[in-house]
Picture 1: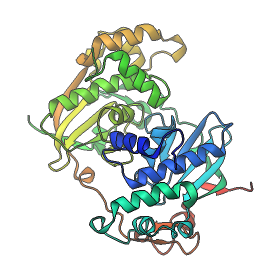
Picture 2: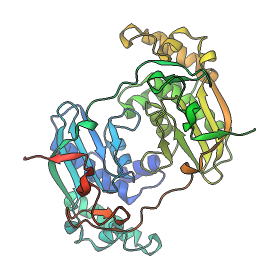
Picture 3: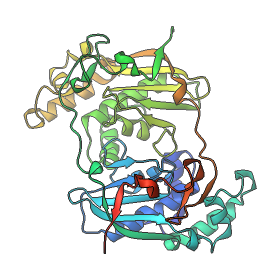
Picture 4: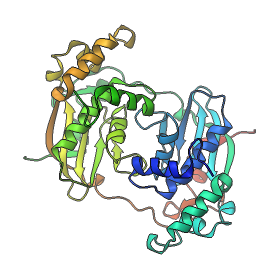
Length: 191
Length: 191
């Protein structure tokens, strides 16, 4: 089954180029994103909340204008293979998720999804064949309203130079930047 | 100045296609990512920790194989326009950031970066001209070691069907999925 305007092979190629390899989860994600888009053709400004940090965020970024860097895509990592696509003004939209009961019709695909086998013991060719043949028939969709916390964008406010490191930072965080206040994710080493 | 193997115009086009519009922060981010890559040509498996959620994550995703969905890019939103690129095995690498003192040579660019004017009062054509001419001369770089928390990947562990919603979830979180435990980012509505 095609993934939106792309053939399965075309999308596999796009996935590999962006993600490093054509992960099955990213291909499954392609069907999920396209099902959600088809359900709300009239909504021009939609956003997405993804419920897993694994692969699915990249399907969203490849097939919509929602991205990690424009904040139209947010990841709430609940470990669930599901996405919420909604009107950014009203918060109404759809949730698309994998239905394990439907997936049972495809043994290799179900086994992969439920992590029944190690990667080495998976039959990759069969998995991809089942994934493409199943298309969006393994999915389910419900109308939803996104939680208020995910509606609208937080504006950062004024910026100033941190008196300790000299870099620009949002002053809302206090008199010095959060890195100088102890939250730096790195330590400087000698060259 | 070119952005890696792309001309400024080519990268502007890529930025618009992925991000929705060619945001100045994404173009600046392009120079930052390319400076980091040039500093560690021998490192094949690198990852990135970005210190802002605004625009810069998309420059990383467009110019490397590190993405939100493959977890080779992580965002720690400290509100600072900086990125850390490091060897995924040793944690050593570089931090690239904007040096406000160097940026002062470019008045429109500095004013935009420090949020001195509203968007309506910015001279967009001049901003882009200064941004392209300045290239990576407004950046600084330091050797760093990433904090241990950002090294390695967390494996999710076994998956089972949630007894309440019937969807697959990582059992490490407890006897039911986190959504059914009250963390769902959505509410189901009647169609």
